[in-house]
Image (cartoon, rainbow, N blue to C red; front, side, top):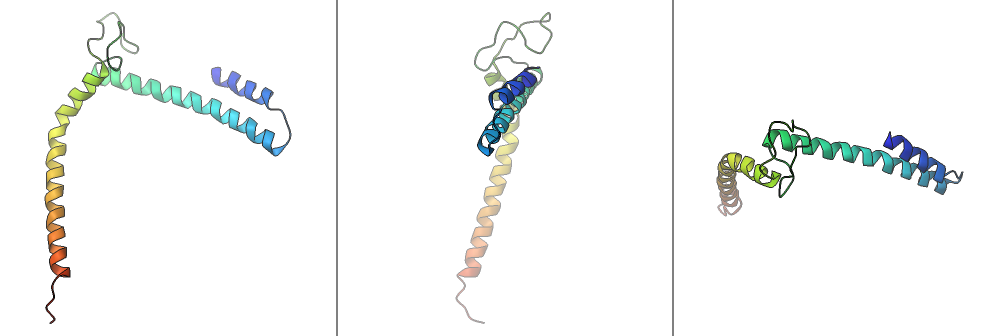
Length: 122
């Protein structure tokens, strides 16, 4: 409903016929649609963080859940700690992959330098 009123207001405020006025009207309508998409995206991110990481709020938790059942318990940790905890569980595998990638890259570098620097003529 907010988007519809925002679009209607944008069209009312920009009723001119020139190309510049039409562009301003379409720009205002696009801003209205973009705000709705942004709000929806932020709400989805908040819901995902709250449900998957069992956290609420970024630095400090609030006294209630936004998306979970508030009768069960209150939030105990902020999402920064939840994200850190989740990253700590998967960071070991990422470190192993990075070490292997560095070893492969160095090996390829040494082989290519050896091929380029070979001054022997056959």
